Length: 235
Length: 149
Image (tube, rainbow over all chains, first blue to last red; front, side):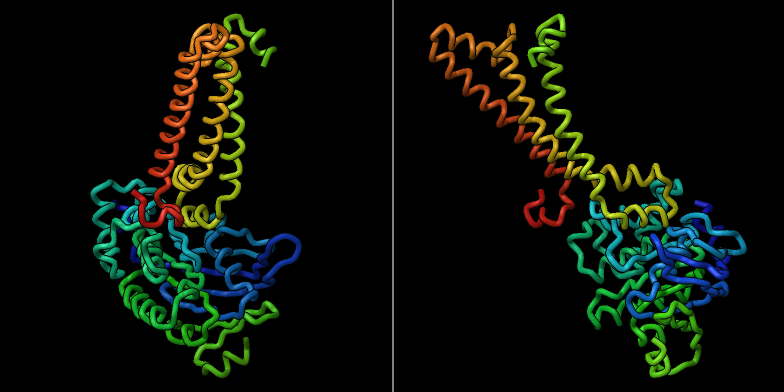
């Protein structure tokens, strides 16, 4: 119970110091330098295949850097941690668990008591607008609703950083706009540093405090205050 | 099979051994395939929520492999029946297979038919039980749409 409250409030600083990331033979990203200030919402825009997801997987600790370092609050990232929650593009919910049990999962892993777990999960389910759907299975929900559940599941444990891998990429335009509003709303009173990855320039401009472009060449350029046209040209 | 029957002092032990081995392999192979076919996404989701390997085993691998495990159980049950009945016919001292075969050798046709029907009914009942348990346990599968319960 205490873990939920004490880690909240302290936002995480994320640093990529000349990190090289990749699979198999050749690195997808090389010499990436990025510093995300605590509490900042950084959006990384890139076309498909530019290594956006790879970047996030590195930050999440799912992929170890081949060179350079990845730091979370000054400590080297050596593996996944509940402090850095990840939201996946495809639906990462466990299909055999109901909405409630999916949202309870991170709390259960931390050993939060049953009653407290249920209360916190229901609060979040309500907050993402899914009140009344707690007992449904993921297959009984629409894509947008499933992403709402993922959002609740990621944030219920009060992570200090949230890594979002095109969470709204597969949704239709209207649902996407709804989800973006919900996300901004929810993030306003959540103490999390956010790294959000997308291929949608408008989404990046809407959500980000800072917008970075990941070009095809693997370079990461900061384009804060840039217009839509400038960003599109950089892609 | 003859070696196994010779190897074990009591005939019934040999029958149990044969049946076990015959059922074991389909179950093991299909469980292995089910585990290997699991999407890594579920495991990664649990890991990034702070789960350990143990959490991912209990929360992802075991439930996620269940459909495959039940597939193996169905096949295993069928094979096990075939083995137990034929082993009983060859070397049993009791059991439906033994009784049916004995009735046949004694030219007691009514008892033979009763034996055959019993074997069929038992096979059907056990595979139906596994099918039902499997459906209950894997209600979350996308194809279980609608008539899930």
